[in-house]
Amino acid sequence: MPPASPQHILGADLSALAAAFRRDGYTDASCDEVQSLTRALGLPPPQVTLRALNAPAALRTHTALWALGLPVPEAELAPLLGPPLVERLITLGILNRGAGAIRAEFSVIPSDGLLTTRDFDAVITGKPAGDDYVLGIGPSTRRLAALMVPTPGGLTLDLGTGQGFLAITASQWSSRVIATDVNRRALSAAAFSANISGRTNIEFREGSYFEPVADLRGKCNLILCNPPFVIQPSGDRVCFTGAERGDRCIQHLVEEGPAYLAPGGWLSVLGNWTHTDESDWADTPMQWAKGRQCDVWIIRRQSWSPRAYAQSWIDELTRNGASADRPLVLDEWLAYYESLGIRRITMGAVVMHRREGKNWARFDTLFSDSAGDAGPQAAQLFENQTTLNDLTPELLLHRAIVPVRGLEIDLRHRFGEQGFAPSSITLRNTTGFPMPLSVQLGALEVVRRLDGSRSLAQIAAEVAQVHGGDPASLAPAIASLGMELLRLGHARLAD
Ligand SMILES: C[S@@+](CC[C@H](N)C(=O)[O-])C[C@H]1O[C@@H](n2cnc3c(N)ncnc32)[C@H](O)[C@@H]1O
Image (cartoon, rainbow, N blue to C red):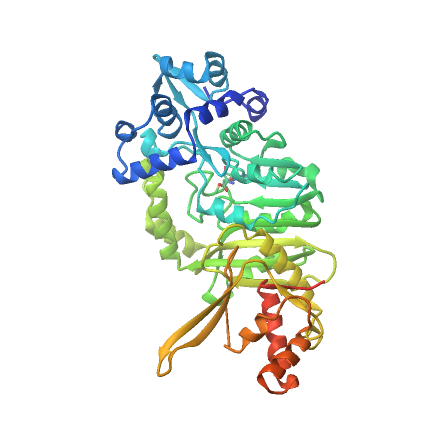
């Protein structure tokens, strides 16, 4: 039986499930242990992992059912969940009964303080993943989660919600979340996750991108989308490649999204887009974002040749069970790119902030992932970039700036004739993207004095007094250091 509608699932009382997990120790830690065990055993069939698992009976039953996708005898499960909850989950199509044993339709994994859901891997089910396969939380989910600018009390729209992790995470500080998907099965999995994670402010709607949310034009404080961005000849599953050709999905989001933002609202989308050579990676998304009353930050993570891109995705999709029924052929992918004139493919993100006035755009290549949340950093970076539009180094000299919390000074020493001597300084963010900035050794004297209480001109005077020299000749270097610290979001203007 297919899973019930998201509305039915949201409306059911499933609170006893989370309580049973807590009571029986089915937690992030127990699931991590199962994963480590599976890896250590060389990814064997799930029965082998279960046999090797040393855990109390109740925890073994939850693990078998929800983590390993194995059937469990009803007589084992009923005492743990209680017969009424088992019946309710069967009616909702979340548990399936057959020959005295029960199987779960979706995997449930405790993670990040939530109960997350997903389809079982093809290696577990032994069947190729279907078109309606629901992906688990992956690296791209994490990247977008880290890039969310928190808009407390606001309305969040999560397009292509999949297993619902982004929507459910945002529901912790949003007043209301609307989550959409074309895959009804994904909406059911997400609703199940929302329900058992105790979230009551999420509404699920079926449909393509903005189609089911016409009523939200001009109202959203945050729009998120981790779209099906793999550029390939024909989509094998809707979670990887949408119905549109090439990079049309991210084009659509960047072009249409701003109209759904409230003033001051944010849009963060991930995607892969195509271009013609190494230097023009920002041009394609910039064309889409132009003239939409938004400031725009285009982030590049990596660019590939078509061949390298195709090979890496063919490997990934094959590992994921996509090619079990239809092998993916490199030459077909390359012919497809050739027919579209694609020479380079970039993977990155576009962040937009709706703002009245003269808008700006900036482009950064950030090869590493952010450490923890980059949302507050993004908000600071946008604020600073807007300030910088009207600020010259001369004007900045009369202002005070303060480093952002977590900025780190990395002072290296090198051994030489005089023993160890300071050799270089790098400033980097420890929360969010590191955005490293190498500065001259003398800058340490300046950076240490940035407490927001004195202007950069006063700092120039102090440094000149301590070390000798002329404040006027130090001032230009200090002003340009200040400009760079603001540009990278390492500091903010003091009030
Ligand atoms: C890469 S998955 C992302 C899932 C989840 N948001 C995450 O970050 O893990 C892409 C999701 O977009 C959905 N999708 C594909 N085409 C869509 C469309 N035209 N409109 C809305 N959702 C779509 C897929 O069903 C899938 O759930």
